[in-house]
Image (tube, rainbow, N blue to C red; front, side, top):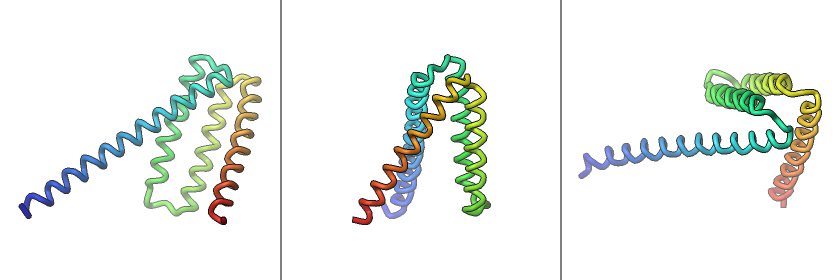
Length: 129
């Protein structure tokens, strides 16, 4: 029994970590679909624009994961690369939008930043209480 136990533990560890990774990817895909639908509605995107937006976001997510997992990069290098990646993605998204959609997108981003800042302050106040 003592010899079998390590194999059982290893089996369950691999199984559960693979399942957790699958669940995380499914969650990310579901979130992408939800955000894509909201963006499509708010910006009145065409189907072609929505597909392009999804490609940009998927590519950005993959590149983000690669940067975050790159052990050879320092924290500052990761931050710099992630900021550059984000700016590049924003430029690509702007390129697929009409001028009216760009204005609306800019407004949406500003609203989201304000909400994030508000939530950050709420969390900060909760931890300080």
